[in-house]
Length: 531
Image 1 (tube, rainbow, N blue to C red):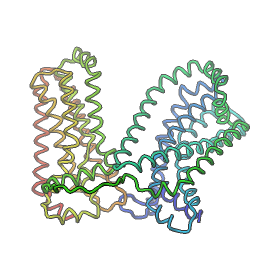
Image 2: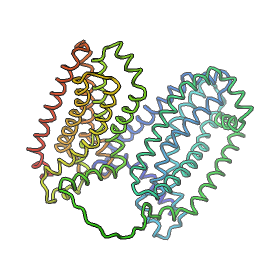
Image 3: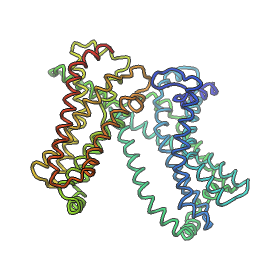
Image 4: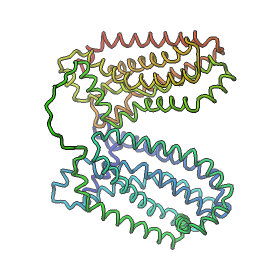
């Protein structure tokens, strides 16, 4: 039974290679080979190449000064963070949110067997992520340090305790996420908040790491001596990563012991955690008047709930909202000094045009309408059968995009106005132009998706991240926002031309928005009913 479950879990990990996420059909031999090559290019070529570049760069100088173990510690830490980030949510979904948990628990299968199979899948993912970082670093270390064959083999063997440590922390954090998620009503927002927090932490560490690594390399011998004297366990891990057999054995045994303890604790509460129904509280019925809403209000509420109930939808198609809010606050806090410097160098009109283009670019990162038709999937007959017009259904999708995008765009525009202190005409265009551009992106995205929908998908991520309509809309919107400012410098305009130039773009965006809205209202209902 364990063998069958392990085979099933491994197949789920590589289901994107074995099966098309758009159609749900099993890939043919040629398509499967192409998927494997593409997957390998992304992991090995792009991500692995990036870490190989860092490994062969400045950090590798630690090897030449006799601190190779410190070099390996740095990359082991990076591999740990990268592997943990890549597998913690996989742990939560694989262990506690798998759709077949109830089915498997109803069978005469011991819970420890189910848990072992699930953990094996999590371990494989952690091993893949950590290997992307460590293997390039190990190759650079072997080339520069030239250890013996045994030590080189030990370097690769270090991947075992490292991946086991990642599994241990992934299980612990996944259990914490499961406990917190069980107490929340809206788990989608919780998932989005955690994902954004992880991204913010990643970029914070990335930018801080530049200066820290430079100082570490510059004083490598001193830091190595201090760590060896005051933090010997860290030194032991470094020597294990360099292939020292005694250190490798001790580190592996210690990690294995902690992992076994973690698994023992998890197994005792596994069934209770999996079967708990979170986010539910007892409520006493209170008689009150039933509130009704209009058809348009009900459709808007339905579309908004569809957007907020999907973490993938919010994270991929609505992150521009967060960016605009953060940008607005940042402008209020730090924008004064920067704007004064830019105004003195380029002129106020040029800075206002640049700010307007930047806000348009942030607006373009929201493409909520682009996959909205496709997300109806095989249930598209439901909105088609409602006692409302097709135009009302399409209009509700536009309304959600505008509500999620235009309000933060207005907030950010007002913040820019407060800091830049433009004239009335410049300020009005600074605020209005991104709003009109947002109307255009909403109408354009809905029109493209209506013409090229994908209703035969098995994963909503396929239509949000990989569909042709979402890609075309996102790229086209970004190109337009970039062309806005590029054309300014190509024409060598001055600050006095800002109002006229921005007014031209306002008319262009308004005309394009009007054209696509007219097409949606005239042709859209007929196309929607025929899907």
